[in-house]
Amino acid sequence: MNLNLNEKGLFQFIELCNKNVITESDIDELLNNKSYSKTIELMGLNWGIGLFDDWKKIFKVAFLGNKEDLNKIQSLCVDHIIKAKNDYKKLISLSNRIIEVINSKEFINIAKEYAFIDSMDSIDVHLLIFGPNAGGNQAIIMDAFFLEPFEDKEITRILAHELHHIIRSKHEVEYKAESNFEEILQMAYWFESEGTANLCNFEETNKLYEMFGYIEKGSTIYYLNNIDVLMNDINNLIVDIYENQKSGKELYQYLFDNLKFHAI
Image 1 (cartoon, helix red, strand yellow):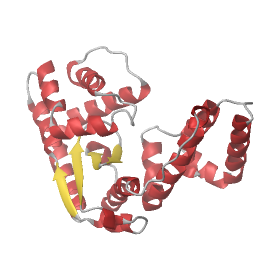
Image 2 (tube, one colour):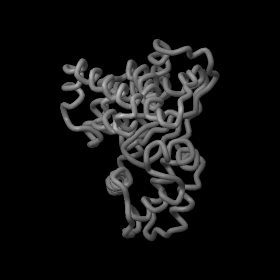
Image 3 (cartoon, one colour):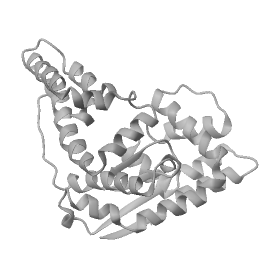
């Protein structure tokens, strides 16, 4: 498999941090970089950050100190970007370490164990700064500063997780459901997509979610030890939805709370 690594977004971010005076047009130029444009297109809504105008708002808060109305995820991104900006000198050495891990291609071997990798000839990897997260949708997208606390082997397994999402999408089961059962459809998608990708790196997934406040510390271990309770609750919720006793939104909220679907 050919590996196409694009770190221009990261280096343009570093250049922006080096400027004495930063303007709104500088932020436009950064976000119009190919890596940022692709990231916004593929993952912006999925991560809850939003599209171009939302990303611009976030970067204006981080670099220009603007006051904006932000949701929880966007605020998390602002804090992350500010920390990366204030410590930008370490980003080059950090990126060199990450690039070495990526170029080893070991993450491809791990993903191979759980997916039909023969369906892919190449993979694009974008390295940049946007927030404490990583994604896999047509391309692997990694925030360099987000990966700093992780050892090389952990980064490898996170990469494998994101690659698995992309491979899986090429063999994706197509679900169909009536509008009143859309949350059950979402449940099935989470179980198939995250459930199999987590085979590549479950411990790292749990570590990063706890580290960045996406879930409460210890919650995943608690759920694993009480998995029968979770499955019984989900079963009852599904029955109630079919019988019009409860809304599908209650199932969605139950699974999204502390990201229970990862443990399941």
